[in-house]
Image 1: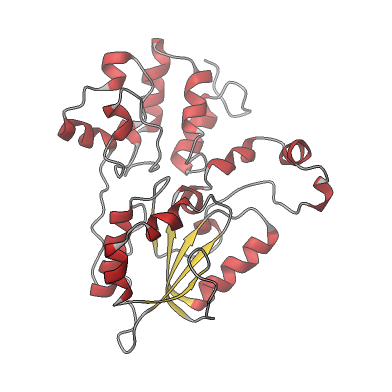
Image 2: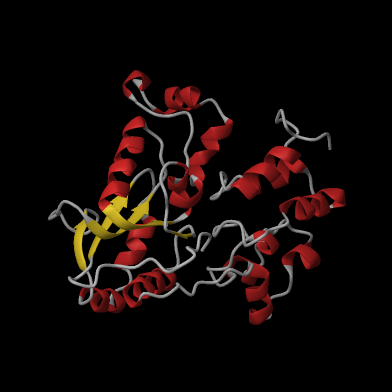
Length: 277
C-alpha cells in the first residue's frame, strides 16, 4: 500500500456495487491473482457485480463503475486517453501491481532509446505506436488507492475490496521486509552474506520469501514508507559492492518509483545526474 485516502473510499449502497477490471501494459499477473482467490472470490461475487473483466469473461458492460481495478502502465498515446475515460466512469479507482503503481519492469526503457528497442524487437517498428516512457497510472489520473507488488498479494487485494464494501480503511502492511525476516527468524542477508538486499527499503507483502532462501530482496513491493534509499545505497557502496551491481537492483520491478528512481540516478556513474563513485 502506498496511497491511503484521508477517509475510506465508499461505494453506493443502493445497489450491488459494480466492479470493473482493466489492463494496460502488463503481464496479466495481478489479474490472475484475483482469479486465484477462488473461495474468497465466490464470496465477493455475492457482494459485487463483476461487469467488466476481459481476462475472465467476454461479456462486458459499460460504465459507470463503483470500483475499478487497473493493472498495467501507460505506454501509448491511446493508453493516456483510455485511462482518462476509465477515471471519469469510476467512483473508486484502485491501481494493482508494480506496473500500475510504478511503471513496471518495462519502465527500464525510461533510461534507454525506446526507438532502438523497437527496432530490435519488431520487424516493422514504423507500425508500432509507443511513448518513450512507461509511467504509473497516478502520473495521469487521480488514484484512490495503490496496491503494490509484482504480483500483488491476493489476500491484500481481498482486504482492500472488503474494506470498500464495509466503508473502512484497508488494513495492509506499511512496514519493510526486514520486519518479516525477523518474524520468520531469517538471518539478515545483507549482514551475513554481504549480498545486496533491498529489504530495509522495500514494503512488506511477499512474506520475505527471497531472504528465506538466501537471496536478497528484489524490491517487488516497491518502496516502504519513508525509505532511506540513499543511506542504504551509500552503505553498500562503501566496500561491499559496485554501483554497477546496485543500480540494476534499484531499476527492477519498481524502477520508476520515485524513491528507487532518484537513488539509482544519483549513484549511476553512467547517468548525467550520477555522482562520481
